[in-house]
Length: 118
Image (cartoon, rainbow, N blue to C red; front, side, top):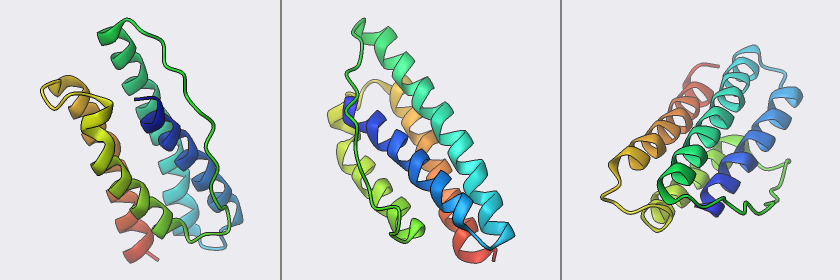
């Protein structure tokens, strides 16, 4: 779970940087909504996991390329989450898996907005 939360934190950071560098109003707004929402998802998932396991997370600091295309970065994060989610929390833990689904929905909705609502 530590790495999943770290990826959400990194996504927030990269989206915030792209938000501030954007010259597109729609992109600026979509990224602003994303970084606000994704940090709430990270907090909710982390607290639920810590409540379930009664263990505190040790979240690593990840780095990413702030110059990389933000849509591609978000797509890569969705793929990574898909491959890591059942390592982070058991498939049977539907409460936590549903919270992860909500975070993924935020990624996917933002990818849609950045791709089609220019």
